[in-house]
Amino acid sequence: MSQIQTLTHDIINQWADNPKGPVALILKQTLLPVDGEGGVIFPPTYADIGYSIDTLSDGTKMAQIDSVPSQANRSEPIFMNAEYKDLVPQIEINLGNKDDPDRKVSILELAHRAGDAVVRSSGELAAEVEAAFKELSRTHNAVPLAKVAPTSLVYGAWDSRGTQVKRPRLIRSVIRAEDVEILHSASQYNSVWKLLDDVQKVELTKEGAKKQNYDLADRGFKDVPAVFRKSSLSKMKDGHFNDDARVLGGIIARGPITRQVTINLIALQSIRGDSDESTQKLKRYLLGLALVAATAETELYLREGCLLRCADEADVWEAVARRGASQYFSLSAEQELSLIKDYAKQAAANFGVKQPEKTYQFNIKKAKELLAKKEEADSDATTEG
Image 1 (cartoon, rainbow, N blue to C red):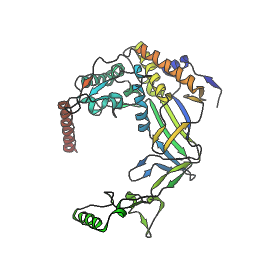
Image 2: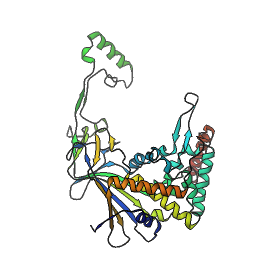
Image 3: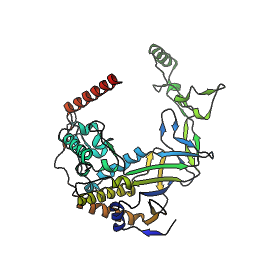
Image 4: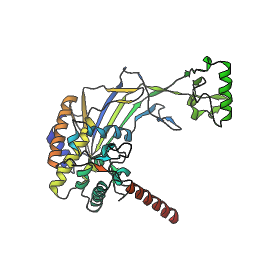
């Protein structure tokens, strides 16, 4: 690693402004279980496969602890917090009905951001977003979209329900653990069955026999051992279950647990405004948001059994050059947060972030029209197929 330099606002401006500058910024944070090295943590489980674990060519195993979409979903809502809410428009959509007339959702909580079906079913907001995507498609001018939904440019968006415009992620984050060992678990659910008398047991058994697919254990009336996964009960070998069929009990990471954040500066350089000045303001603004998303102290309680913390006092950013050696920049975590937050605030003010003066209304009629368009498109695809 070459000499570590101190990060400044001028350096961040160079990253945003110079089309021949670094191609990416990379931040690697070493994480630890709260109970220390060797602590048991639980990765996410997925249908059919359990944990997402790959075996490398040398035989070691690498586990995915948090995926790219999951990291984005954890990160984006920070812009709703008091500390950062002035950096982006706080657009809300009223989903209210007769039972709950004031039920609102923020655009920052929607899975597909500006391309979400809820946005497309919200009257005036749908029209604004449609116009912004069309402008982006026609002239590459991203300012109108950034004025409405800047995180759609930071975290990526696909207007699949309208213009079909796609924007790649500026920021990509993932957490992985290296050299992992898989553990298994076994437990026993003890029901009330042993406390019932013979008459009660007979009556419940008769009732269960009347019902198709009725299981007393499923209703909590019989003891249930939890040793094998239900999805793996068919995986027998020579009359015995292998470890793949057992209930998963977490992992131990013998190697590092790393959160890697990549900010794509090539994707940033492809973004345009309607003039050189607006392009510069827009790129600095979006880079500021991406850096906030990377460094803000989001909670590392990822799921039950997976509570992590940062091991290092300082973060080191790698500015990856097009050719040759990278440059490295570092500040303590506290200094870094302050510097980047100040930079993002200045960039947002220069860009001219405005807060909406109203809440948008979800329109069920528009939602039905959206469904009709989808059915029509599916029908056309089948006919042409």
